[in-house]
Image (tube, rainbow, N blue to C red; front, side, top):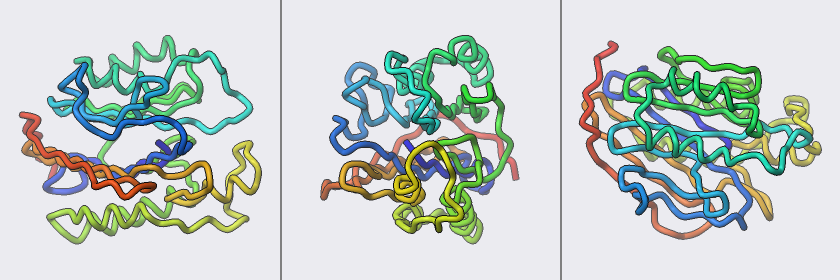
Length: 259
């Protein structure tokens, strides 16, 4: 997962609004989002190579997602799967801060990552680069392959676009969220970050929606979690003509009105 844009407690109807692109090599085997046979309470796609996921929900209203921290010259080939952190949180019952405290003790074993966790009451962000773990306050956020809200061009652009979609209306237009995530505009050279990949790849990776012969945005996911516990989840492929997968259910949680 390489770009997650989300609004947390910034809308009178919704607790959490998420639009996310998963960027990956096209050849990496993957299952589309669905309820897992081995854990029927977990809704997520599945990475068939490592067995974890990049983003998911549980029936009781928990949410988690992960992005890699881009540092190509600091990769441990024998590190445990980062995707397992998402499934571990979703399958458990810990609150965000105890989970972060437990994760801190083993975080150095993993390659660089950012992890979002939502327990139904609080939303947290944790990274093992900088040893940061915090609870988030209401706001609009962007997370790519650096720290939270790092001002990469696609993060800045995405947050601005999400603010415009959220602000003018009570009912969120999911089509507008999907359209937002289709933006293939690449950043100008002078705005490109320097993360250790070649300038050509910095250019390719600077788009919100990435396309290249071997690597790119494979799926877009939109999630709406409203204050009465209703959950909307839709995943659309960016590399095939498969129909979207869509799920709607109630998490049996009712959230305090923050407005």
